Length: 448
Image (cartoon, rainbow, N blue to C red; front, side, top):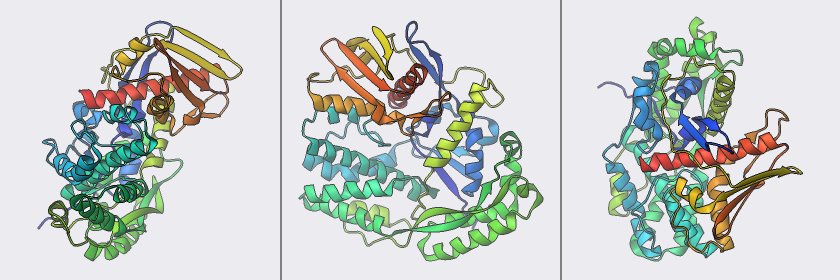
């Protein structure tokens, strides 16, 4: 039987880091942007560090629809699992008892990335009670956790899941839900989470002086190396609880041997990386738990937040330098424009930009927001946009950052006002562009 090899699921939402603003004028023409699939070049060293031979793209990702635009060196190693949404249906089945008890509409359910995005926004902003908003968000978080865990289980993937946030959601829901089925599903998911522990695998760590373009040129050669392929097999075996401990030790031995090879020594050093590894699958206590438990694989959980942030910074510098070496020449993703603001001013470190409310919300498919004067709804709307500044936007002139806390959103009957605090006017404008462009990118991913 052929050994299975390591594959990694590119996190849903990572595509939002690589939308290029192609028109950023606030006073004429509005904002327009595209998705740059050349971003894969900047993630290459992370793919190798994770010991993978394949890359899985979440079927809900904007990248999934643009694979024909990806450079061949990466495209032939990419697959899109669950195109028929079978696994998505299984994840919905896990959370349905909780959703039914809490009166949450699952019809628009979309795999949850982080706070306040996607079709769930309407449900969240319709809720005035902070407790209800928290519980609804917990249902969305649990669905996203189950969906991406199931993708990993069914396809033998390493996945990036916020285990701490999912644990919090389960804790809240167990306190709120009373039905036997809901509590059984939650107990099983919690037991599954409890089986994970943090371990350190041996890996390849890119040298600071490693040249990205040369690394990409040698990408196929790296992945064809027999020793590297053995590491990839061991990375897959981390998901098999009976042999996970041996696999951990093997990754360290193999990685040390690999960096002694001339080709790898030019680009990499030995390192270790934290990975959460499952120690055992709990006994099923419900029908849906039985569906999960029948699989022998528990996907290793990796944190790709920092690598993706680093890749985005390298990509942004690459684009600012006007270097198109890894970009596709044709537009990859053109979106409708955000209409120009009614007014804009900057004074004492504060940028104030006012839009016509109906023109603006139409651009973002948010035309049914109720009770515009409710302050709780203002906070929901603010989070929807401000979350795009996490990680923060950086001012290139002053090396200062603009994070979600610098943003305020207010609306009245006919207008919406953004207030952004920053070190200078250009930095404030750049932060606002980031918020608006990424939010529209998210809407693209769900609407297309």
